Image (cartoon, rainbow, N blue to C red; front, side, top):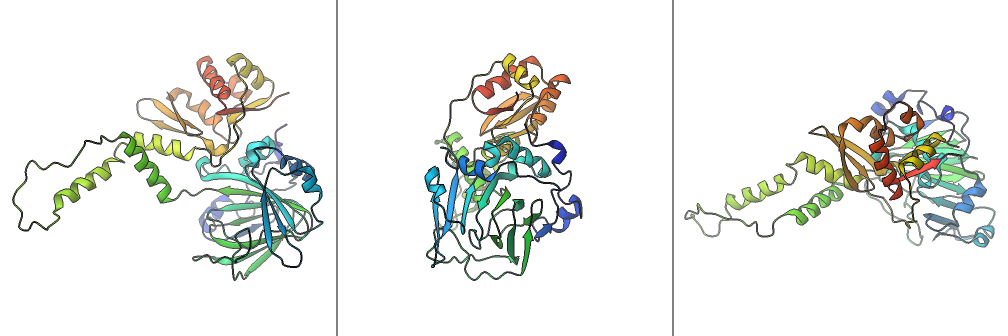
Length: 395
């Protein structure tokens, strides 16, 4: 069953409201919200979480503090059951990335941050920590919402973003040197801490606890410009060279001249001159899977089978929230982006595509309202058969 919709808060910032949060805190300063998620119950139990970390294709990490030295050592999963059973009673943390991909109930939690565009989200990372467990003081280069799911965790933070990151040597994880906390809070289930990019923080489990980290993504200028240039290198004519049929004698042969400068400037500007082509490129890049994962053979779906599954309570959605985007373009069409692939569709199906790429996905209610014509349903079934869409739930 999906995470109960009546237990997903309409506003994580009920004390101050979303508008005030965005105006005064978003990418500006930290905020601790008591009772951000009233009545929150972890969708995953500690035992289920430990079991999940033994599966192939799960991006798990185990950080253990060595007794006596305090050195943090890290191992990557999948882990053996015996290895987990041999863990000490305290001072370790198990983390799993992309829990929203693996557990539908965790994916449904993303509805609480619907105000953030899909492409700006990374994933929900979940951590399970023994008492006194933690990963040391560190910074993240993106916004993060730290929701306490089970037990208690003490968070200590700095009051200003870190410009120059200096790390402690000798650890297998990145630990910030010279960290001094300006504020601290103890979070209990349902409490949440928001941190803008590069604010130093350290979390320590006060008892066995689980934390849900909703991480955002901020693509770098280098990342996006590299994509534009790589695309241009594939499309440009290698024989398109500089020409100067109007050549005139120059004052000095050593002068560079403005002709080649202007020719190069125009060439660079033309790379972004086609707005639709640039939109298609960015949609493809920003919807690509964030991490390597093992690809399993997807189930084959026919339109009738998909319709029956939706009628039976299933939900159709992209493999990951960040991997499903769309954008209307000229000519009565729209571009659908799924895991880096681009599909051109009629703009008339936008309501169905909007539902598909929403946090809740496409379900039987969208069939009932006639948003999904037979031709579109067949197309979606093909995408599900290719693994670009997943069918969650159903009896």
